[in-house]
Picture 1 (cartoon, rainbow, N blue to C red):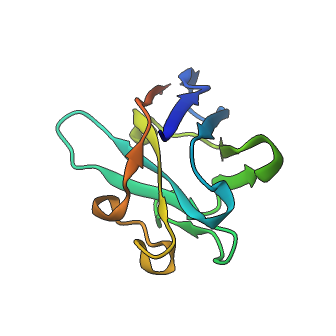
Picture 2: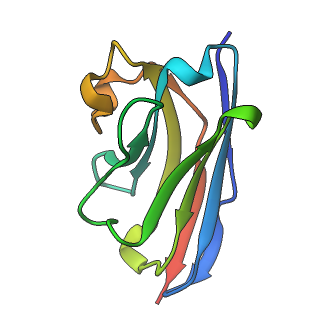
Length: 126
């Protein structure tokens, strides 16, 4: 059974940093596309970043240059380093995974991801 769990959320001031982690188990980690998504109250879910062992990292335009996605295959853990945080980054952040065959080029399409964590809240104050 696939299990994913996020951690590392919290409250920071504008300009601050946070690092989110997503521990995973129950599937072949290396052959999956991994992604971070977020959803703010009253807004649609937004793809933030994605990564796989055969594709380059992808980022939403709103986070390029500020967020970095990475993975530690030995620890089956996905990370999202978030720097220069802005109030508009406030949201619930989710990690997600899907086989590479499900998500063409590891695109930031939430409807193509099969497995999701419970989310971790990030709040950025001005």
